[in-house]
Structures are given as C-alpha cells and as structure tokens.
Figure 1 (cartoon, rainbow, N blue to C red):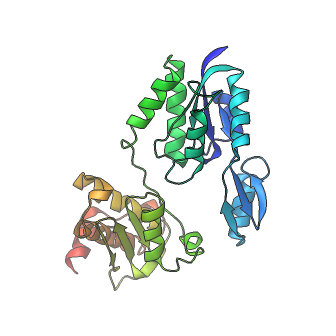
Figure 2: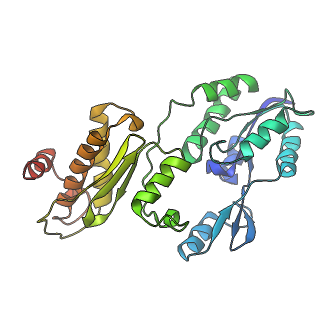
Figure 3: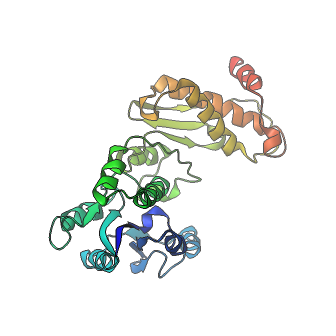
Length: 289
C-alpha cells in the first residue's frame, strides 16, 4: 500500500486525463442547468457548458453529497495509508467545512486531512501540484496540510473578466455592483471593470471610483486594447510594490488613468502588438489632461 494519496475536486480545473497522469483523485462537482443536475466532466464537457452558458441558460451550483465524498475517500484509502483532500475554499462553499467535519470521525480520523487554504481554480490547481510534489518527497499528509495552509496568504492571482454579465444576471445590474459582489462574496482583493469608451471602474476594500478615457482619440482598431489596459495596469502596480488590497483610491485612480490612456492610444493603430504605445506617449497624453 502506498503512503500518501492526493484528492481534490473539479473546482481545481483538473480534468480526469490530468488526474490520471498525476495519480490523484478528482471529485466531480455537481451543478444545475435549468434545474437539471450535471456533474462537471462526467455528464457535460467544459466546451458544452460554456456553449450553453453563452445561450443564456440558468446555472446554479450545488455541493456533493457526503456519501459521494466518503465513497471516493474509501476508494482511495484502499490504495493509500492516508489522504490529503484539497476541496474548494470554505469561503466559497460549505463543502469544505462538511468534509472537515467528516474527517474528524471514524474511520477517517487520522487518515484524511482536509486542506482549507482559501483556493479555487488556478491557485487551487497549483496547491494540488504542490501536494503531489511534497507527497513524492515523503512528506506525511498532516505535514502537507500544514505547509499548504501556512502558505495561504503567499499567492495573489489577477483575474480578467471578459464580461460581468453573468454576475449582473443575479440582479447586480451595474458594473459597480458586480465589482462589489466580487470583493464581498468571492474574496477578490482588487477589481477593474473596463467599460470601453466610458473608462474604467476600480475598487478594493479601501475605496472605489471611475476613471474616464481621454477624449479626442480617433479610433482605428480596438484589437488588443483590453490586454494593453491589463498589462499597463499591472506595470504600474508592480512599480508601487504594494498588495492589491493595500492600494489607496488615489493610487488605483492613477493606475487606471495610465492604463486607460495606454489602451486609448493603442486604438489609433491597427493590430495588437504593433499598437502598444511607448511609455512616454502615455505620459504625454496624461499631461495633456
């Protein structure tokens, strides 16, 4: 019997093919489309899901039943002496706390260690890979859990949304309200919502505001403007060397003003990479007011 097994859920973005390569277990998470139950990666593919989402179906999430979780634990404990389970963050789903409670009781006490390190999606994926590496080096399940949870605050992810329409679908009809939902309910530390020629809305827990785009820009091609906004904003944030949640409203305003000017300048030229403006061009446009 092997020493330490690793298990996660499909919120990690790990498909079954990758799970097989890594030698881990992945619990498919349930959700509903127009009130019909599906399991991610089992009853519907990622491509089918996004295609239906674009068609405007109603989607709601759910938790796996305790029986489903324990069934996979039992299967894995037939192969491993102990198990590290990395589910979606307790801040986003009650499934983590349910698993933690179950792991305290027999026959799982001392055998199943549930990690709650505040992760979902790409950071959660990274945690799973770290756990696999640590298990390969001979670390115990208890030690792996401690390492992952101790590093809870040592990762920042920047997410760019192509649309906030799915957030607004839940009744949050303005960009500001959608941004506040991300901050309040999803643990996001900083939000920029680009609004085309109307500029950008910015927010973190210290404040919020709107930055207008410069006027008098003759638009030729908008290809890559959103990417240039994102890259420009990131460059200014890195210069400040501050955590996203520590930025003041004044600093966010300056960052988004630079990024809006850079994106606006890019629309005067054709193409993506070829349209990226030089920093001095951006600063000159900012000086013009």
